[in-house]
Amino acid sequence: MPRDRSMALVCAALIAGVLVAPARAGDAAAGAVAYARDCARCHRDEAALRTTVAAAADPAAALDAFLARHRAPDPVRRADIVAYLAAPR
Ligand code: HEC
Image (cartoon, rainbow, N blue to C red):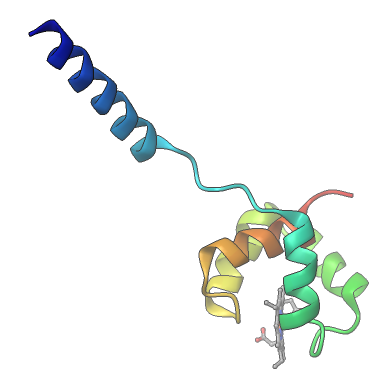
């Protein structure tokens, strides 16, 4: 039946869309809040931390890999913190 077939195509397209969706881009504003709550007590000199982060060849990727092992295991929160700290300003 044509109708069933088009529904199947719509479903396939939706599933493919979910599977190939890129990783959620971080939200820098949420990252600022997360940084204040989870990082600032140890990293009080945020400017110095930013300088260290910016020195990497690919700051966002390097920071993401580091934070996966350092106090930001949750990928969504980590993406927010990376957006906050590694975005060019
Ligand atoms: C309990 C204290 C503590 C907390 C909380 C903490 N850090 Fe750290 N962080 C450290 C220490 C100590 C080092 C240096 C040693 C190391 O590499 O683990 C460090 C190193 C780093 C580095 C590597 C650059 C550097 O200055 O050595 C980055 C980037 C970083 N932290 C980011 C973060 C972020 C982002 C958060 C919040 C998610 C966070 N840290 C939370 C203590 C902390």
